[in-house]
Amino acid sequence: MATEFERPMSSYAPYSETRTPDTTLESVFPTQHALMRALVAKASALGPVPYAIVWPCSSHALGGAVEAARHGIIIPLLVGDRTKIEKTAREAGLDIAGMRIEQADDEATAVKHAIALVHAGEAQGLTKGSLHTDTFMVGVIKQESGLRTKRRMSHVFCINVPDYPELLLVSDAAINIAPDLATKRDIVQNAIDLHHALGLGTPRVALLSAVETINTKIQGTLDAASLCKMADRKEITGGILDGPLAMDVAVSSESARIKGVVSDVAGRAQILVAPDLESGNILVKSLAFLGKSATSGIVMGAKVPVLLTSRADDATARLASAAIGALYARYLDATTRQ
Image: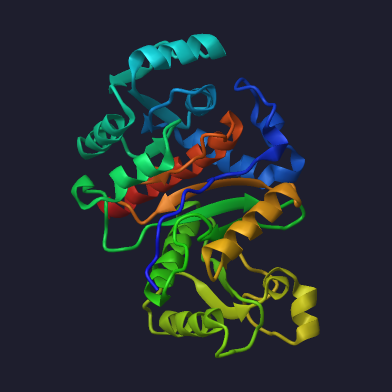
């Protein structure tokens, strides 16, 4: 079935809704989110990467850019209406002195101009500000943008679940609604590539379903088995795949033991691949709002990192996404030069 684009929320951070932009990493990411804090600290230590912030005309969108710049993660190129940006900064008490503002009279023009900055080599990534996701993504995915690759674009959440020993990547919970097998292959490869880009090593990839056995009435089990064979044949590289796996078996060694599932992935998954957008979205929101997880995310499969943050995301949620984007931008630059 052909895949479609859905307007997503790219990160959910209920623990930080009342934070102010001027914070330390320890206050933004408490002890239970130390893994995410370490990732942000890593990006900060490596130095800033230039990012085009498209239409940062709300306090959250602009505040996220200011906070990421303050921590040395990005160099914001603010693309939008100068009057609105400066008014937003004044009203929110944000210091944008010295930040470059590229004038764009409307949202669609801002997207085009930001993409032009990428092609000119002045920006290494794009961040959605306070404009509608549809306006932003239509500009990114259309052929004439020059940002498309042979691979399908997909969204990857990076999640710090309290008490889970490693960061979890979850995909796709935001873009591809009902991915077919070819799209799932790209979803898996995109997530694997991000795992390597973040310096997390060779990932263990769980292809999720409701059961651990092949069931011809459950398409996800058939796709999972096919994806594992594709990995055997090197059509998917860089990760260790297993599936179908139910969620409990994927993340709980005790559940895997009780059910008799023996694999390198069971109970120790680092990437969770959902069978469709609905299940993935429910999983991510459950981890965020019930599991009190710290989350962030990025769109993969384009020529540059694309941060698809929600207009409702606060500055601290955007900080983690900015860190992931900066690390991935460095990874792309390094692999291109090899």
